[in-house]
Image (cartoon, rainbow, N blue to C red; front, side):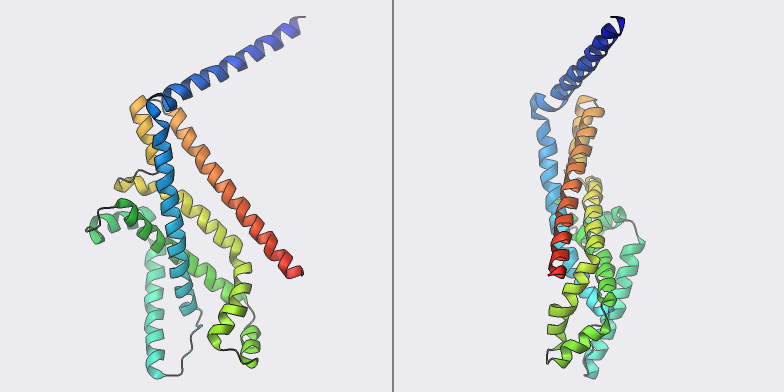
Length: 252
């Protein structure tokens, strides 16, 4: 019977631990509606992430097309313009990929976009520009991975270079680089945690506000970590579903 008593004592200790954990969570997060700090921060985090992803896709696609020599105009003036844009694109990629994100964010906030008072807007721009550099390299790699004969086949069918690129090359390139793009978007979501350096109330900053108010480090920081984890797992699942749909379309 002694082993039954030991098991009962073990269950009692586990139950007491859960009760203590709930009491700590209630005191730290529920009292005075402190959980709203997490909710408000989550809203800003998602806003920055979505805006930066959209901006990064636009910038990255344009830079990738220039770097992959998609445009090959015959006009001498247009050739010169494309060459200049290629040089600018190379400088952009070197500078953005060669400096820390937090430094770029602070430069945007304290030096360049000083006339903008909304920190979330500045963060969207800064993270979007940063994401564009990495997306550009991913998409450029995807474009180059498509056989050159695809472009020639499209042109032989009477399609223009632009039509061939968007209807034949890009769909194949997207399938090749989707996992890498997904990893970039997940990394971007987590990188937004440095937005608090310019006073933005993001998810990480919200948890830190609760920590400094209640002097409880465990509950708010672990709560923020769980929210980040749920977001990453959800985004990973969505990307996995998209990859499976693309593979099914290939089979058909």
